[in-house]
Each structure stands twice: as C-alpha cells, then as structure tokens.
Image 1 (cartoon, rainbow, N blue to C red):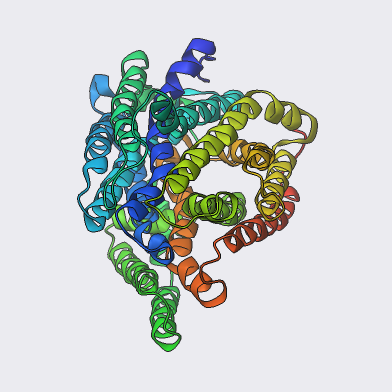
Image 2 (image 1 turned 60 degrees about the horizontal axis):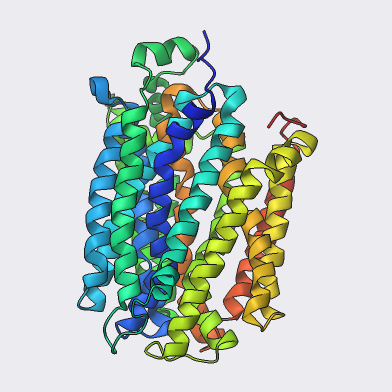
Length: 500
C-alpha cells in the first residue's frame, strides 16, 4: 500500500510552516552578532556567545525526533504538537530578545530561541517523509527549501525595510537599534502564523496507516539488543577524547569555550556506557538506549552523508558568525559597533543574506531539479558544494560591497543544495517509523560542526589572525572542499541518474 500523491496545495501546506521558522532563523543568523557587539562584546568572543545555538540543537533534535516518532495525540497528530509548542516558545523569545539589557541576557535568550526553533524544525524534516511517497521526496524537500529561502529573505531584509521607512537604525552605545527590535517582533508574529497554517491545513496518517505503508520497518528491540553486545571501550574512548580536549585547553591556553566541547565528549561517553548497561539488563524500551542504539546503528549511506553535512555546516556557521564583522571591516572600513558605518554594514549583510536565500529559493525549484534529473542527486550536491567554495573564497578578491552580490549567488546555490539534496538522498532509504529519530540524529552533524566552530574558531583566529576576520572565509572555503571530497566517496555507492 502506498500513500496518495500530493498535489501543489498539499506540498505547499506541508512545508509552509518552515517559512515562518526560517524567518526566525534568519533574524537570529543576521542579527545576533550585531546585538552582541551593540551590547559591548569583543569580536573575538562572538563564537563563544553563539555556542548556545548548536548546543541546543545537539541536545534537542534527537530527543524531539525520538519522542515525535512515538507520539499520537488523536486529531493533533504526531509531529504537529511539536510544531505548535516550538512556535509558541520561539515567538515569545523573538519578542523578548531585542529588549535584552545585557550580554548575558541576550545569550540566554539565544539559547531559548534556538531550542524553540529546533523543537518545531526537527519534526518538519520528518513530516515531509511522513506525508509523501518516495517518488515525491525530492520535490517535497525542494518546496521546503524554497520556503526556507523565502522566509530567510523576509527575515534578513526586514531591518533594511524598517530603515527605509524612517525607523532609527542607530542606537546609543549599549542599546539595540529600533530596526532590529521591530524586525524581531514582526518575526515572532510571522513565525507563529505560518506554523499554525500548516497545523490547521494538514492531517497526519495514523500509526496503523503508517505501518501499512512501511510493513518492513524493523522493531525497537533488535536495535537495543545489538547495543547490548557493544563494548565499553568505545565509550571510554569518547571520555578519553573529552579529557584530552580539556588538557589541550589548559596546555595551550585556548578559549574557555573549548571546555564545553570536552564536557560534551565526556558526557556522551558516560551516556553511552549507561545505555549499554541498560540494554544488557533487558531494559530495551528507554529513550537513552534507543537513541544511542540508533546512532551506533546508522545505515552506511547515512554515515557517509553525515560527514558531508559536518563539513558543509562548518562553513555555514563560520559565515553566519563572521560576515557582519568581515563586511564592516573590509568593505565599510569600521570596527566600531556604535558607528553609523557599522550599522549600515550590518544592514548590507542582511541584504546579502536575503540575496543568497532568494537565489536558493529559485534554484531549489528550477536548477537543482534539472541537475538532479540529468546527473543524479549526489552529483548535483557536488556542484552545490563547489559553488559554495567559490562564493566564500571570492570574499578575498572583492572589496566593493556591490560586487559581493556575485559571491552570494554562488553561496545561494550551495545553500539550496545543502537544504534539499542530503535529505532527499536520505529520506528514501530510512524506515517510516524511525524518520523522526534518524532525522534528529542526522542533524547532529548539522549542529556538531557549529559547536566546534563556536568553541574552536575563536582560539584559532586569536592565535593566527587576531583582528582579521576575513580569514574565516578561507576556513569556510577549505571545509567545503573537504565536503566535496567526502561526496565523491558517497557517489560510488549510489545509483544515478535519479528522478528529481
């Protein structure tokens, strides 16, 4: 038995909520460095303040994925309860964020905002797989990517639109401009309404219907039984790696945020030891053993694709943290966050982010499907990764802010590909009953590189290029070249061409 084919209206309704979620992410990505610097933070400390975002994703997404796979609230369904809860919390955070009186409060609100956005976002990835037949996965994720691009354009441009309407774009030292304040308030309303649209216009298949669509889905017990046979040596290796990171931080005087990375490695090692012990005792239905077992038992294709995601999202997070200081310093000649030139540069970054997201929205519905039909999904993503490397590298060559539009076109193609192709490749190979947990685990390789960038990049830049943020773009270009090499390996184990 197969699912009914969705028409345009169905595809639209399934992913429209992502339009609002991405408005929230765009406001966060384009303005948080601006908010932190406006409140008086030094540029070298920005990565440490951003650490809240990847950490919340790392913790929240697997848990929400596991829970949403096992949720059924009647008419409200499986994924939609999480859409609603996350949207309410994120809207509140967006309203409170621009009223932050100090850096510590803004960092706390970033933590809350990112956790809330992840609560809504993670089930949306699985929702496409839930609602669509396998032959519609590519178009489903392409439509979702188009909404992501459109939402990001709106969120990125809103401060500039406010300035054009006469709203003050400059504030006294220690305060956040009104353009940013109004943008966040608008984003809170838009996010909630968009997610609510998806909730009221879509139904969900019942557990019985999902079982009939995917009768071959493996049960839970085999995963945890396999975990019971694992040795504690791997867990000890994770703990040892964490201790080594902590030692390196003290030995080489790295930034204190590196301690968080070490603590996370130790924490996962300890958690995996507990999960193995529970599985050996026959407690095979608990969340911890299920998550650790599914992580250890990822399909080979998912493991290789996870490596590509790791390098890809390292580059993206470098860009989000550093584009504002890079453009302000190298294209507008200022490092003073209280100056009019800096605020103009920050608005320009919002425009650039809007451009790459607009390009992504167009590419997702036109260029990527054409490339996918002609060359296959894997090679299409290889093209996207190459475009990203070109886009980041061009920041070294272009000094006129107007010329950065060309950089953003390449980055936009890359962004469209990274949002659509990996999920389209992956979704068709995953069991229906575990789409939530596997999508959550897959997104570990989206947030883990962000955490590494937030904890390590500041130390690297302080040691090698103090006060020269332009070199972060070189790191971004290099990581995409590594992603491209990893994708070449993946190309050897997937058939082509595939239907888009």
